[in-house]
Image 1 (cartoon, rainbow, N blue to C red):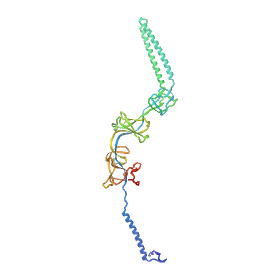
Image 2: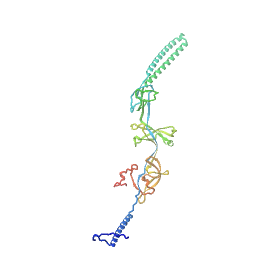
Image 3: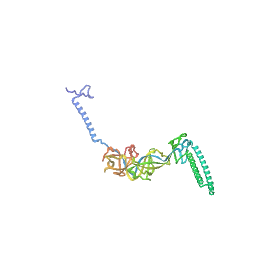
Image 4: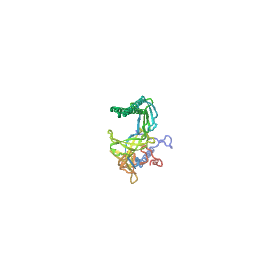
Amino acid sequence: MKPSLVSITSSSATPGATASPRVVRACVVAVLGLALGAIAACSNKSEAAPKTRPPPLVVVSKVVARDVPVEVRAPVELRPLAQADVGSKTLGYLDAVLVERGDKVKRGQLLALVRPSDLPDQLVAARGTLAQAQASTALARKNLDRLTSLAPRGVVSQQELQQAQAALASAEAQEEAAKAQVAAYATRLGETKITSPLDGVVAARRLDPGALVGPTTGTPIVTIARIDVLRVFVTVPEREVHLVRVGQKAHVEVDALAGRSIEGTVVRLAPTLDPATRTLDAEVQIDNTSGELRPGMFGRGSIVVDVHPAAPVVPATAVQITNGKRYVFVLKKDGQGTEKVERREIETGVDEGTWLEVKKGVTAGEEVVTVGMDAISDGTVVRVSRDVDPWKGRVDAGALGEHGELR
């Protein structure tokens, strides 16, 4: 069966009239020609302007030269220069505590009072014994004087004279013993007044009035600490012991004062290494007259053992590690001004965490890639962005163009 031809109605024809086959074929050919022309035009346009991928965008930073300190580092805890737990040598009950935590005290200042149990009575008894000894001594001396005066006349024998001399010596010895006993009890009674052994502050108050104190209780009444000068102990590994000397500069950074470095000085070194850790303790003292630092603060201590002058340093984010070797991408320009990267092996020195010293491989003034290294290789053409913080992604005002685009 042959398909029927499409009827085309002309605006000038009468209703119901049918066009001839020749006219229909002409119309179909015209429509197909227009369609093929449009397709060819689109194809020519796409071939004339092919799409290409732009070069990868990277962030670069300049290699700068600075004096790099060589340091021995270790975690440290701030300690007072001197600290004493103050207790009572006399057994008794705490009668009064005259200071509170945080009070400043001077050496010899009265801190507390202790009420002794039977010490006053013992002192009275000792004084009575001393009086008896003094009376015995006086009597023995008079007897000896009398016998000495009678001896030339032959009234007394030599034996009686020697016995009188011995009696006087014994009485004098008993008198001295009684005096010492009285002095001992008086000293113990004076020790019921608790005084500060050093200048400092009251770091802790541990007991209240009414508590039993004495050498057997084991609990101090207060703790006094000197905090105008603090000290830390930096543990030095065995392989670095030969680098540390008394008088070297040191720095301490504490978490409570972020971003600040407190200077100190190495004042002494331990004579031996710790057999358990194979480390040496280096004592560093820090001035704390301002009172900003507190004992017990935790931080990081470092002793400066050497300085590398004008050494090139690069950001830590610019360094790649492959098979134990370190590489950076250095920005270069070819003869046509196109910016490319060159992968270069480097030798690093001091590692400061956020930057590294470079001993060999780059020089100050060169630019290295810090962000975008995953998308590039040696010789890659790149687009460059400068003055961008690699940690926060923040772009400085100088890195933006007139319309806000990256330069």
